Image (tube, rainbow, N blue to C red; front, side, top):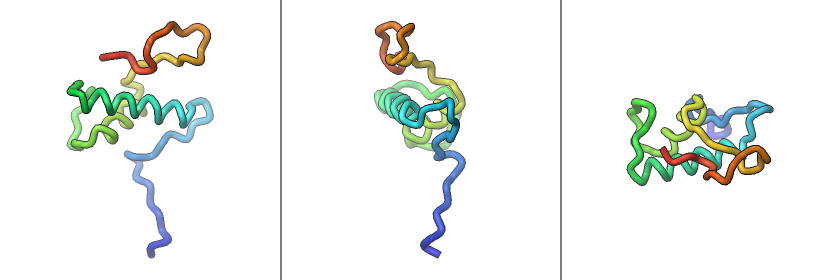
Length: 82
């Protein structure tokens, strides 16, 4: 039974070809730091873990960010201060 690994839908990283897994992780990590520093969550949640909350916010598209690799992007931070 130890061989069976289950992935929770809440904690799964999106498997979308248009969405970079690396970008998802970086944006979620920066948002988690903001939550740890006292920023308010966009979602009502029962979880006290900022990483779980930030992943769900990013997955739902509630966190605005700019891609520094994009030539059209300005010199803003990867995750805008909210």
